[in-house]
Image 1 (cartoon, rainbow, N blue to C red):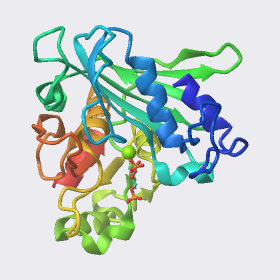
Image 2 (image 1 turned 135 degrees about the vertical axis):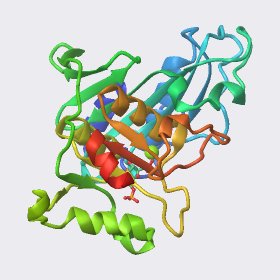
Image 3 (image 1 turned 180 degrees about the horizontal axis):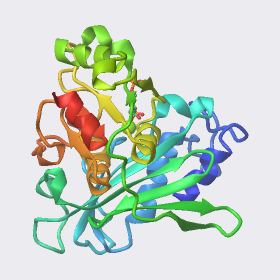
Length: 295
Ligand code: AHM
Ligand code: MG
């Protein structure tokens, strides 16, 4: 994360925005920032002996541990640089990760069975956000902790102890350009968000949408409200990927006292995966906001 942050923070100065024609000293073409981040994570994690396989948004298949290294007890799933559309315009982006304990025998290569576990089986999950400061937020199933990178000493320091999400807040976060493609229920909910209803003491909600899930969920975690990426007529399962986007974020939100569903009454962490890159509709945030969406 420190290495990715270093390069993200210089992105406008060194030529790593978009695709380039340049080659590095090994004679390889200089990678785009998301591919670069993908390689950084793989190389940092392939030899430590903890993992028996990895899966990344950038690779179609499971990434095996090189044969010369020991195979460990866990699998790592990650989105190396989420929010790609924001990279070139200096808006916050992030890295998301999820860790599962293997279910197959130790000492061998991890298989699909190790990766295709429901989210409640995660033993740790987190994200890094590359914003005005770089932060690491994670859970290992006993609360959520946030660390801020102090560049002067090069260390992540505990800055957000035991994060709790507010019970409720008048903020919704969604790509409303998809409004006409949503179900009637989803459109009704968004219409309701915008209403003043004096007899219920409800004021119109604020809309906040960055378009980087890490940044939108991070704000939701700290300020409260709800972040949604619903299904629509074109994408019946929404846009976000279950295993390395929705599951880790849902684990964090639940651990902070929030809720995460598929928008149709189902707890997101109970979805049983059947594809490495499968998508899911997602509603995460303050418990009372998520209840409002479900209602
Ligand atoms: P990416 O993995 O290609 O970057 O896509 C995921 C991103 C999320 O960070 C964000 O929540 C979503 O896509 C935004 O999508 P849209 O542009 O449809 O609003
Ligand atoms: Mg992504």
